[in-house]
Image (cartoon, rainbow, N blue to C red; front, top):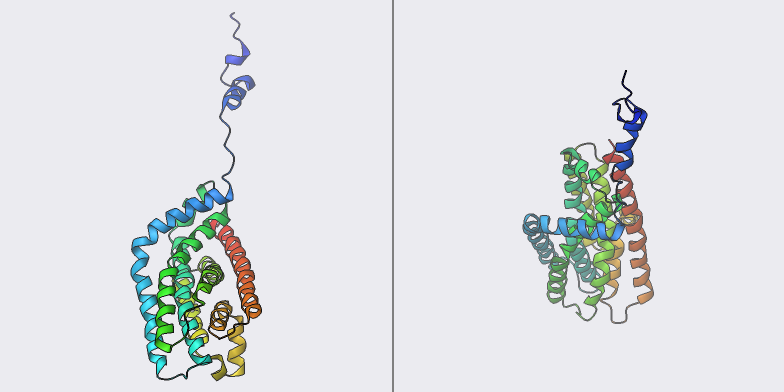
Length: 273
C-alpha cells in the first residue's frame, strides 16, 4: 500500500488553504477626491454634447422672460429681482431639472449597478455628477446676467458675485435634483418633480416678492434658489449691504451641504435595491 501526502489530496484542508493563502488581496478603496475628479471629468465629457443644446434653451428662456417683464415691472428693486431671478433660473434648469431626469433614468435603466461595482465612494458619484451639471450653467448665467443688466440699466460693477452665487446655488439645487431623481420610484415621476422644481424657481424667483401674497412669500423662503437670487439682487444697489449678501450665501452653502448629503444617502439606498 502506497502512502500519499495529505497536502496533495484534492479534498484535504491543506490543499484548500494553499490557493487562499496565495490569492491576491484587494487593493484599498479609492479616496474621495481622486474619485470625485474622475467622475466629474467623465460626466463632463459625456454631457458636453447632449446638454449644450439644452443650455441654450435655458439661456434663451431666461432672456425671453426678462424681455417680457421689461414692459411690466418698474425700475429699481423690481428690475433687480427680475434680473437676479432670471440668472439663477439657468442654474435651476440645469442643476435641478436635468439632474433629476438623469438620476431618474440612471436608476430605471440599471446604470447605478455600474457605479456600484466601481471602487468609488457614493459621495464621489453624486458630487461628481452634480458638479459636472452645475458647470454647464456658468456661461448661460453670465450671459443672462449681462444681458439683463444692459436691458434694465443696472450696474455691472458687482457681477463678480456670480463666482459665489453659481456654485453655492448650484450645489443646493443639484443636491435637490439628484435626491428627487434617486428617490422617485419611476423616471417619469423624477422628470415631473424636476419640472415642478424648475417651475417653482421660475415663479417664485423671477417675480418680485413685493407683489406676492404672504403665503407665497413663505413658500419662496423654502426654495433654495431664493437665497442665491437675494444675494445677487442685493449687489445692484449703490451701497450693497454685504453682511446680508454673505448671510444669503451662507444659507445657500448650508442647504447645499444638506441636500448633497441627502442625495448621497438616496444613492446608497437606490444602489442596494
